[in-house]
Image (cartoon, rainbow, N blue to C red; front, side, top):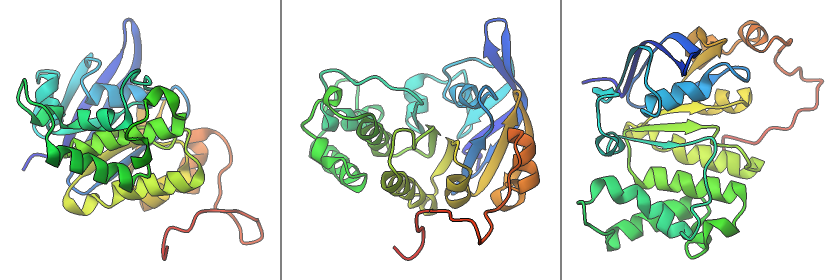
Length: 258
């Protein structure tokens, strides 16, 4: 069985400006890879290349064995979904209408969502705490609420690979946890995740593997407990990093037993 995502020696950029150089990664079913790195490291460029939004200058990308580029956006959307870093307000569309857009790849060319599609959309929206936005235009909701509706759209798509670019942006602590838990719950069913995050502590809780990018190159990758070390993170962000000592007052959400 082909990996959900296979990146081999990927280099990519914008016009004459190179951003990524020689990045490789293999993501299997049930794995959640987090991409960490300073601003400008190439994190968003990586996920855009995975989704076929920019073409590699060299190297290859395959999603569920399908070459990217080389596969139509409709065929790619049957196996992969993504939530971008920035999104429009889907002016004129309600929360439910946006969530139902996730069913489009699985409908015929002229097909409309049916009762089962609406039931699935309501279920995911309720799970993410945004079902009350079903009849609200997205132009009238907060940035955090809008982000959760777009994640609902991605999950309603029932992808094999979920690509997230800063999925917790604009979210308060509670919704950061609940949103990432919704993603975690699907790992046991075989979902694969590639997520760009800035919060190292969130990464430690939700990811199985980590890819560290700096200046467009991979400086480390592998299981989170092996990769996310004080030494590696200090070098990555060029600031001393260390585990919080017991004497320091640090507030973190409870991830177990709630």
